[in-house]
Length: 158
Image (cartoon, rainbow, N blue to C red):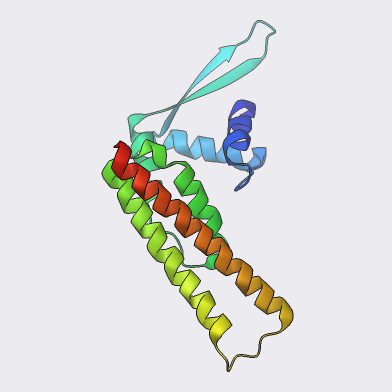
């Protein structure tokens, strides 16, 4: 679990940081669902170590989760979109295209809603709300630009 925790931290720490208390039951559930296999090994120092391997069923489940539509809740969207995008390398060209289109479409929709609120002359917005709306527009614009770059790379390199 320590190794898995360190691997998650090294690759995904800007987006998520699961606790050991969350990892252990998740690994157990994944093993019960035949997504992982485990192997227990006794080290030279007498400490029991458990090594996990992803099964073919686990690879299919990972792809399914990456391609599963995201919630339209803006609070969760950007973080979850970044997690999915950072795992896009396990997908084939068509699956990546599907993911990129799905995420870009939803990002554009959320960005347009934020722009509408900002532009609505009948909505009373104070200074703080305006600044946060502007920031949201920049965040979504940046995410859309990143996805468009991924789309171009996917077409060129695959």
